Image (cartoon, rainbow, N blue to C red; front, side, top):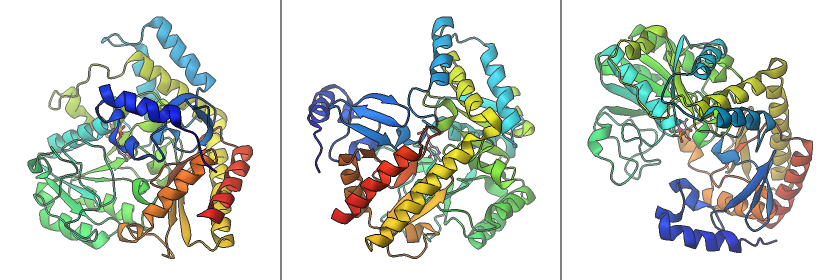
Length: 435
Ligand code: PLP
């Protein structure tokens, strides 16, 4: 089966004349057979400019937790459009949203609002340094915390094994144009290795401001923390007065209303949130302990942004979070059941076609891999997958009318249901037979 994407191809050529690279975010350029131009989306489906319709598991890289054009989100945004989308003044929507966030996120005494996950991470790092008076930050291989110079590193690096530790000053930059000095204070450690963490913390505790971690390594393999790992991280950071930042830009409002830390019953000092928070409208935030967040009130930490907390963004976030909270958050059970059906189906089809592969799942988000590994529990194991084969799989799935990320991460929304699951598994069956 092939797919006609002539309009997308021709629009990409046109776009390249004016838009640097032809796409607005570098990652999007890797889509095969071509970066698609969207026409419209409805519920779990999206249509491109060539008239092809897809069941959408890309979900805009995560934010579309209510699917496309959800009526509650549209209503919230329409109200904002009528009132004025932004003022650069305070408005009650900010209070309503901040109050709601302190109610649903267990670690949140106070929140600060920004526009993107990258900005939220920048603020969390700044708060940590101001609060502790220290500068170094521990981050982990395979985790992604946005693309700011302060934290963006290359994965996997040609220069080092993933299991190795990189001390401050030796962490490779993630992109051309990034000063190596910007990562001067970053220590890179293997994740899920409590000994490596404990040893580094004990050795350098007096200079470490923060440890930043995804609660589940969603960006590279949906890898879960080993039992007790995050709990021990919490104990050690507390013991040494180091700020523990949980980057919940993916997991926030996705694994449950209270995010991963709510599910785990663990209180980091700060969490970063974004993506699903606004249902597709740009909004992010940092939430956490009052005495750390007080750095903003005291004026020690500058937190700026022309459009921070704008009416359109706060309305979208309020509409999205209220929709997710309906009926005691029963939508989370629904999303998880849908994802379970997909994961079980894909695993059975791997067996049926004798294709070596596995799926790591975290509720409504999961990572599909072609690999001979029995388990993928760390970044080294993840890097043994056949990424080229998966990219081909994604391209063939697209021709079947199923949109998935070429990297392997699937998102399920509140409006995906059994019809989508059935059609998707039929496509997976056909594609695996021809792969
Ligand atoms: N943190 C995590 C865990 C992410 O997955 C991402 C984006 O994928 C970010 C931060 C950066 O968010 P944004 O792309 O909104 O800047």
